[in-house]
Length: 251
Image (cartoon, rainbow, N blue to C red; front, side, top):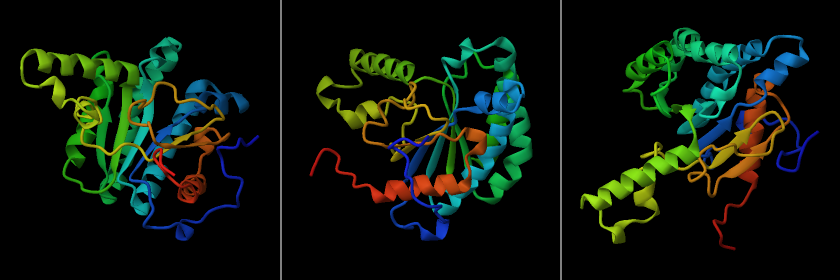
């Protein structure tokens, strides 16, 4: 069942989109992998594997549209609560994803980045991520930004602690603190705030994802599970974004 956040229009083709009014930063909560697998009588990890295959497809579509940043919520600080075997499988996915997809991402001038905390992540998870970041660091196209071991409240608390420390050591005056200064203490420093947030699977919440950064993001939800989310669905989300008037509190 569609909800009112999702457009009920016909299928959108990339050629129909306004190439000028493309969101600079799109954030995606890739939800529904486990339920996708359950519907097919498969283990949850099969859904995560299928979802992984979708990342490159959507990243390339975003790159070709001219999106500057695509941030994917890959693993949250709360996801550690999942069953041990599922967490272990998720931690192994970067070993498979990057060797398979890095050549095409390089061909599309994509730069890999990560936000989140390295502490707590296994070395076999971090090693392929860091290798991909190093290999793509000079690329100038789409920034494919993986939120891995990431939680927005923890990010904001860390930012506050670091800001307070700078005030206490005299490198920052309290009257200098504004939104731009505080944003510089977050993990997304240097990136534009998301213009559009997409969440798959029918859940209608933000789930501790980029809470400060999404103050004025347009939100778009779909009932489709992430493994079923197509480039046409992505184009429709962009089309809906282009149909909206962004007033930022004005009229």
